[in-house]
Length: 214
Length: 327
Image (tube, rainbow over all chains, first blue to last red; front, side):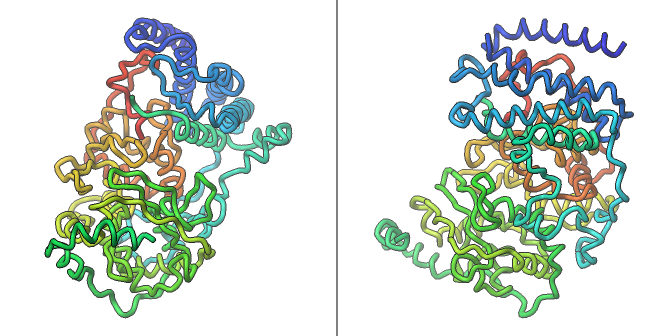
């Protein structure tokens, strides 16, 4: 039922896209990759509320959504970025090709994480941690409460000051050198942790390789 | 060398001006307390992270060491390089006293009495308490010293004439309003402290006039001319609601970078999340969202606009493109 509805929406969306295309000037391979990005965006939009606990978690939908993301990442994504394909309306930055290794690594990272999420969807969400101290409720004019009550127990002084790596960050680049063991490790993670890695990868790639309005 | 350049290029230009001489002599800054309370490094580190000290003074993109100098910022006034603020005695701030540090952070005045350029967002830190300063100081003392100084700023005349900044200070420098309001919730008040103070949202999301002063009339209405060509969208409540933001999903965006429509932040905002708000407590992110979505403190957050389900990126009218590419 939900799937049919999604399918119908997708059809309608493509129709809108086809009409609008003439006005925006995105054609050919640029349009193809925009469609891929849009499909990933829509999958993320569908999964995000589940990852926040705002709607009930559904392992099947998570797995399917992650598979959609994976299907548009990695080699599939790279094949839509032939060197210098900047014609018409595009958000791609030329840095993609001058920095191809990084771009390719991010595309592959995305695929690895999304595949892992597709597999790890039944793991569900990380159990909620103890409710944080009510920092927001404190009297900020004094601001002299003991640190334990108001700072994030997740981060050390060294992490906050930036001279130690954030514990949440996994050494992806090193991990990718041994894809088999990385995949195994990843698929044991909670779904929301993997989803966080996916969104970090999106942001990181957008920051480096997506241009602003032009 | 910089001194020489200043002497040759600037001095002849200003020597005829009595005003310039007066500016150079005009003393700025107020005395800081002789003693500060005992600092707490954990609190200070959280404040250094939420205030953006760490992200601005660390060149993460170049894998630079923490707080040893940030990525250069290209602005209409020139290129600014956030300096090394590790405790190295020569290259950093190792010889500073806590009073020097306090004056730099909350007054924007160097130990030599020179005004800092407002690219250093000290005006937002003007409300920091003595305890805040002491905590920050403790945290900074834990940082490994780095012996290499950051490059100098590359700023052209007249902006290279630092004393001119005193005029800027007289016109535009004012402490943020972070006082608690009667009848508002605790998260709202905490959000106000963060948004208006340490987290300095307005530094990017409010436009600036030709002199680089924040345009009060366009508060939070966005800024298309950020350093490096990035753009900050409006974060006025109506615009946030129109983009589908709620307290819950705005907090989530600050944690994850994921927007209500499934897009992910790019540009400077992805850095703000990665290097800043992703370190915040959930309570603080919620506080920020609570304040931004209810800036008047009415207790009411408007319902978000439904997200258009059928506007794929490729089909959108680009002239009305969502914020996705501009943050």
